[in-house]
Amino acid sequence: MRSKTVYHSHPLAEIYYFHSGTGEYILGDTLFQLKQGDLIIMDGLTRHGPKFNAQGAPFVRTMFQFEPYALRLAEQHVFGIDLLQPFEQLGNYIIHLHGDSKEEFEQMLSRFNRFYGKQDPVNCGRFLMAFYDMLLFIYEKCKHKLTGLYASGARSEKERIVRQVIQFIEHRYMDDLTLDELVKQFHLSKQYLSKLFREVTGMTIMDYIYRRRINQAKILFYMAKEKAVTDVCFQVGFKDVSHFSRKFKLQEGLPPEQYRKTVQGHV
Image 1 (cartoon, rainbow, N blue to C red):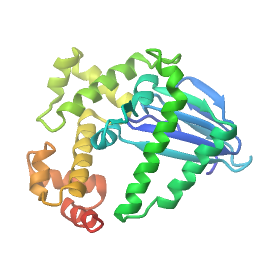
Image 2: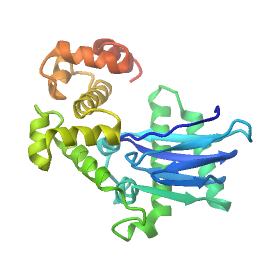
Image 3: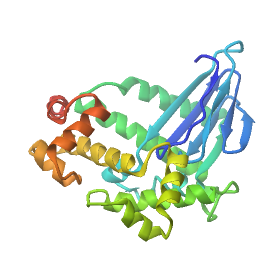
């Protein structure tokens, strides 16, 4: 990676692992020196990013970003464990791995590398199982913190409000959800809510709703071969197929019908 600072926020859960090099990490208003074996979990809403210098040792890291709802779609609980709990309750948390724990986690990453990018169902399934295993590992390392209600670095009031808005959208994105309804639900002015959401996530509320609908459409195309583009369009909350197609192509780079044929060719 070249010398730069990448400072951003988003509504995705994120896992960041530092292998080697010289650099720092910005998490909210805190700047700390990265050490080999540092594992950071984030809910994504707190502004964050690495800061490193190309003149030093090579900066090597592994990063995962994922949509929490996609995990819940598969299964919220595995053997009675809520795998999203560390991200939702702790918000942001740094785990310092060393010894056997560090070796075990890096072996997990090696497994990911074996299955990454392969499209056949068996390797896709093994990739998903490796991901579950990593989330279980993270949960185990966070258990002592999860006994409390909040982590020591509690999220800001702005992030708390935006997280509530996102959770509300998660239950209503397929409906004819409007900004007026959100304003009424959260007792905030339209201007303030719009500004707050964009400040924290980097996108407008409607852009987030469209993206959520399109991501759900992608899942349906993959999992439900019998559903036509029109069926999926209406099921995820769009009222017009042309509008759905324009938004889908803008986000994914190809129209929904072509995307549907592509992913179903791998099922």
